[in-house]
Image 1 (cartoon, helix red, strand yellow):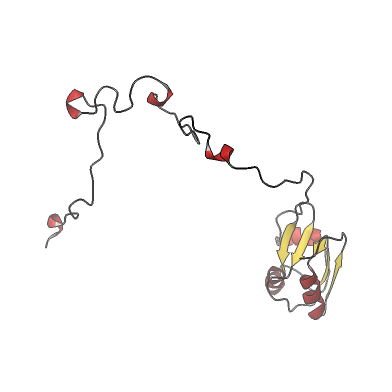
Image 2 (tube, rainbow, N blue to C red; image 1 turned 120 degrees about the vertical axis):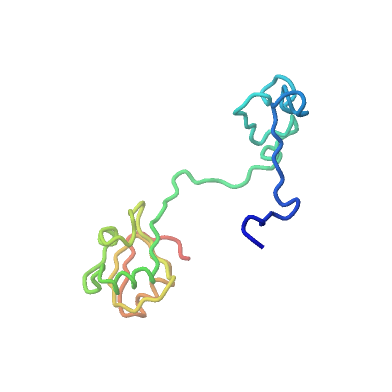
Amino acid sequence: MKLHELRDNPGAAKKSKRVARGPGSGKGKTAGRGIKGQKSRSGVAIGGYEGGQMPLYRRLPKRGFTKPNAKSFAVVNLGQLQAFVDAGKLDAKADITEDMLVESGVVRRKLDGVRVLAKGELKAKLKLAVTGASKAAIAAVEKAGGSLSVTVATAAE
């Protein structure tokens, strides 16, 4: 077999139908779009339209509620803190505040505060002062010999 003898399997590559190429093609004139109307024009996408039938998104019931004043916290895992201490970007001896976490790049921005979660392992003795923390995170920091002070009481994990 030579390179010029290579062929696709029969039926693997189907040629697309070339529309609007004259009456002999069988798809000339209106190109299979019918006549007039919105759908016969180009650039039309009627998303969710089901031909007059009640669309699915209107048939389904509304669910849930979005709290308008919900707080959104920047999340930090213990494993991330340990990695930044190991890399020398966080000083384990100093008191670590939310501003220090932003400065070192652990979190991008504070949002409504920083919340510490217990994912990962912490070996360094850290003294943290943050807006929120899960009970497991507080226990893990204290187990490592550090302390974690929470300024605003948030719901546990």
